[in-house]
Length: 157
Ligand SMILES: CC(C)(COP(=O)(O)OP(=O)(O)OC[C@H]1O[C@@H](n2cnc3c(N)ncnc32)[C@H](O)[C@@H]1OP(=O)(O)O)[C@@H](O)C(=O)NCCC(=O)NCCS
Image 1 (tube, rainbow, N blue to C red):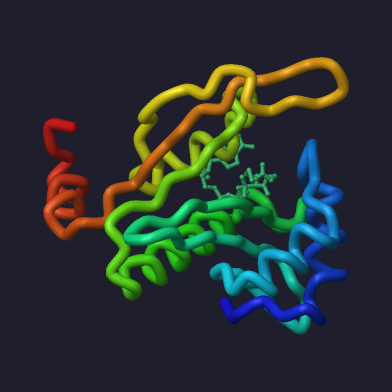
Image 2: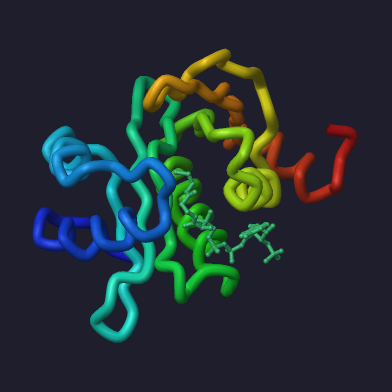
């Protein structure tokens, strides 16, 4: 993993447009970089295979985007990228990472759950597109050392 730069946006956008149902635009990625958000890419053999964007806010961060190239999915890359983003948040002493996800995105929800995210609420009609709307499932991952211990111990939830 390394930091994303403006020079990576074409490659990231190509993946985004291929794998996301409602892709970010070039401007969304450029703005995220200009705003100093935590933007990372996973590069192997000179090829960008995945990326993530996280926005820090006070002592928390919101995971805004994560994607893995279609040909590279189901090989553990999404989990590795997410894990590195959580480590980066811990390194900044952030307390919690949260995100919003479409309830229909079963792959992403399964990934987030396996990384320690729990559902904390629903935003009704949050995603609006072409006359229809979809709720957003809100999920959060507690980064405090105590919660990690609980996670490891398979705790009481
Ligand atoms: C979500 C996404 C990033 C996962 O990346 P990935 O590299 O395929 O994920 P991994 O191989 O690390 O899988 C980790 C876990 O996620 C879950 N998962 C991933 N893809 C899945 C799928 N298609 N169906 C069900 N569960 C899935 C599984 O629990 C998996 O663990 P397992 O392989 O041990 O069963 C990828 O599917 C993607 O880019 N999707 C399109 C973009 C997107 O929806 N992003 C999230 C919203 S911004």
